[in-house]
Image (cartoon, rainbow, N blue to C red; front, side, top):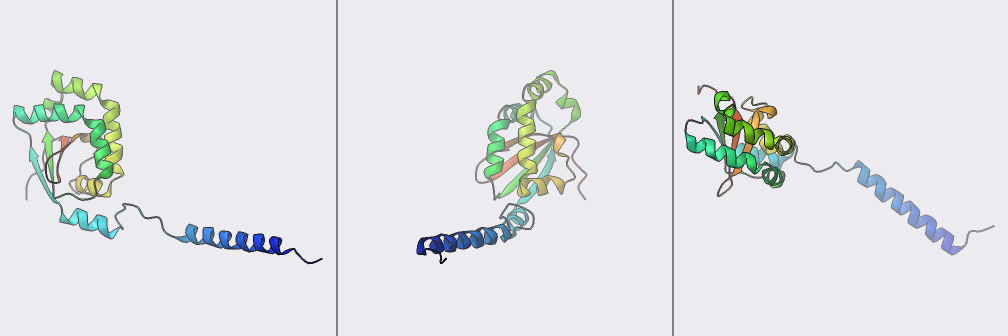
Length: 161
């Protein structure tokens, strides 16, 4: 018994849809990985500077930045290009002062969200990994003007070569 014209049309549409979905499955997913040419250009084009925090002003900046960890995590996820990335190392002694220790403890969950956002960003992850910084040592990210970002890290700044 021959198939009705509508049944043939339905089979043809189903075949086209199946081929379309199969083609999509074979297409690589576009992500911000280190294989992405745009991510590599953004990382290579960014200036990364490191310094040791020495002033009370930098400690105050740290406390403010820790308090803004959740919005900073959202910004990290949206950032695909930076002009400059500063890494400020906070001594472990400073991190253990009552005022800093308190704000770190109060914002631990937000800080974990921030660290996960950094880990998911090729731009940020490569910048901190290239300086041998562990994610667990990152305690804040501060966004400044004109694509300038400061990352606060507990530890001692590496010696300049």
